[in-house]
Length: 301
Image (cartoon, rainbow, N blue to C red):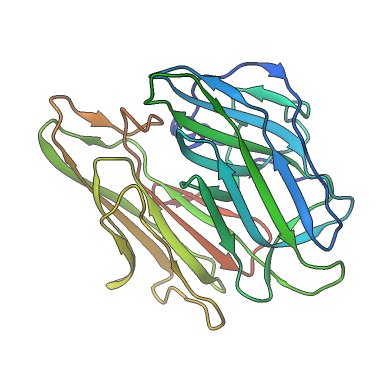
């Protein structure tokens, strides 16, 4: 199984977005269609009270007996969802069926994420994300219940896979995170970072992530604009469907986030979608056997 690297940085907690949860085993339906079709992981429902913001993680193992290449991820979340992220875990993770608030340890092994109730990520032809046999995983769900009734939060993640023996180029995520910034009350702020990319990396998807004070995000390659958005909630994605994918000629992925805070109090970087801000770039590239994580300006894995 894949191991987490250790990272003694408090902001790792912010990236993994710890919040409320319950330390108890639970049951969920995990279907295993034929190997040529793929697999499904479904989380059990968790009650989220009116006005509550909560994050929880559900641990299980992927129901495949041989390594597979995923060519399409898709997901669905019940109303009130803010985001879903699928991570690979290691052999030290909690038992299958556990729901808790700790959400892994060390540097997260990011695989797939969604910010919409229904979403998908389709790989370019001949590209896939390798999932080892019986790989331990956890699904992180972040919910904000703005209604006046309890919601029963749950999600499903489906994977369509290549047929056994079918060749594909392995892909993985390139994830950045900026820590330690604050947006002043009734003020603006800008932050970001610049991360070295692998010399042979070819990128086929690029996006960004902030919370509600974000007014502009950008990913640049030196002076060249690769991606930008002015919609914090639905930033979109720039994608390349076929080779040649995008190479960062500068050797660095540079990301930037701009904020405008109309509130009477300052807003700091952190996990809460309601009370904090974030600045991230999320991309996918080939060839890759494991994801790259860049903290501020430093690639830590």
